[in-house]
Length: 591
View 1 (cartoon, rainbow, N blue to C red):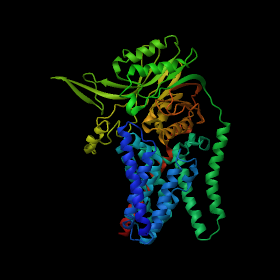
View 2 (cartoon, helix red, strand yellow):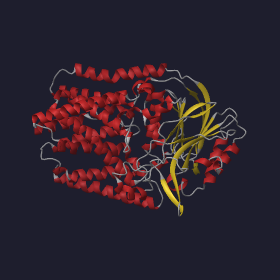
View 3 (tube, rainbow, N blue to C red):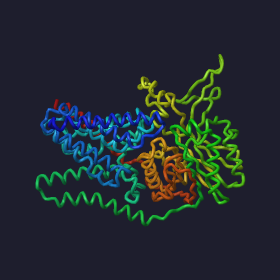
View 4 (cartoon, rainbow, N blue to C red):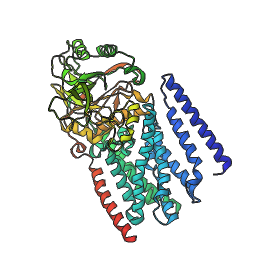
C-alpha cells in the first residue's frame, strides 16, 4: 500500500480510536453506558495496528491481496452473525476468501508455513469477533479485549491444523478443515475457558424456520452445513477462475443450501405443538445492573416493583410466575423461607394456591462439619479456632405459597471471569485483575447434574443466563423430565446492543432442539415466550419495566437430539484424532 494512502489512513483510524476511548472514559465517569462505542473503538484501533505493521506482515508481493481477502472473510463472518444484518447466508461463503489465502500461501512457499497463515487467519477471526461480540466490553473493558483477542487466537488453532494436514494429505485437506473446526467448537463448549457464542450453528438463530432440523442434529448440524457450503463455494470459484463448466459445482452448492431449507420449512409449517397448556406470567423489572440494581436501589424497593408488575397479570388461572436472574439475595440456603423477600412474595400471593414462583437469587451455602467442600469453597475466620467454610451460588428457587419446601437449583455453566477464573492454578497471575473487575477467583458453587423444579403443574428446566447457550447441556434437563424451559437472565450488562438480542435468539435454537416451549425473564433485555417451533412471542422492549402473560405447552416428547446429543461433533472429534495422527506420521516420514 502506497504511503500517500497508508499513512493518512493510519492517522485517521488511530484518531478515531483515541477519540472513542476518551469518550468512553468520559461516559464512564458520568455513569453512562457505552452502547456501540466499543465496536468503533476496536475496529478503528485494530485497523490502525494492521496498517501500521502491514509491510511486516509478509515478504510476499501478494501480502496486500491476502490482507484484503482475510479482511473480507472477517467482515462476511461478522456481518452474517445474528442481529448485525439479516444476512445469515453470508456464512456460506465467509471462509472462502481465507481459504484462498491459505492455499496461495502454501503454493508460494511450496510447503506448510504456519506463521504466515496464522497472521492472516488471526486477522480474520479478530474482525469476526469484534463485529459480532464487541458488546462484551460493555460488561468490563478488559473482559471485552480478552474475549475478542483470545477467542480469535483459539479459533486460529484448528485453521493452522487444517493448513498443516492439507500439505501432507491434499485429498483430505478440506475434510480436515471441517473436522478440526467442529472439534474445536465441541471442546469450546466443555472446558473452563468456554466462550461458544460464535458457534457456527448459532448463525441461523434469528431465522428458526430455516433450521427446524436442529431437533435431529443440534447446532453442529448447522456448523457442518456452513463448512460444507464454504468448501463447495470455493470449488465453484475455482471452476469459474479456470473457465470450467459451472453447472455441476453450482448445482451441488445450491442443493446443499436449498434442500435443508426446504426440509426445515416443511417441518416448520407442519409442526403442531403438543402438551398440556400452562399459564405463565413473566416479569421484567428493568433495573440497570452497572450502577442501579446492585448499588443504589434497596432490595425492598426492587421487590415492590416485582410485586406491582406481577399483580397486573397474575390471577387465579396463573400456574407460574417467573422472575429473572439474581432477583434478590444474598440468601443463606438453610434459611430461604425466613428471608424477608421470600416472606413478602409468599404473603403477596397467598390468594393463589396454584401459583408457583420461579426466581433467580444470589445465595450462599455454609458447609456443615464433615460436609465435603466444593471447588468454590471460601473461608472466613469468625474468631480464633472458628472458621466458616462456605460457597457463593447463582441459583434458582421455586416458591409455592402453601408449600414450605423451597427446591434450589445451582447455576453450573459459569461465565469465565465474573463467575470463575478458568484453570486458576495455571492463570494464578490473573487473580488481581479478576478481583479488580469484581469477578471471583474462588468461583461459584455448582452441581454435578442438572435438576428440575417439579410441582403438580409439571417439571421445568431452570436455565440461568449463560446456560441457555449450551445445547447438549440443556438436553440434560429434558432427560430429567423437564417439560418446559424457563430462562432467567440479566442482559442489561451489554446495553442496548446486539448482545441481548443474540442471547434471545439462541433460546429459539434450544426450543427447536428439545421441542420445549420457553418462558424467558430478563431483568433488563428482552423477555418473551418462545414456542416449540422457536417462534419468539410477545417480546418486550429493552429498558421497559413490564409483565407479560402467555400460555405455553408442557411437552413430554423426546427429540432425536435430546436422545443422542452432539453426535456430529463426536464423529468430527474421532475423525480429527485420526487426521492428526496421520499428519504426524506423514510429516515424520518426509522429515
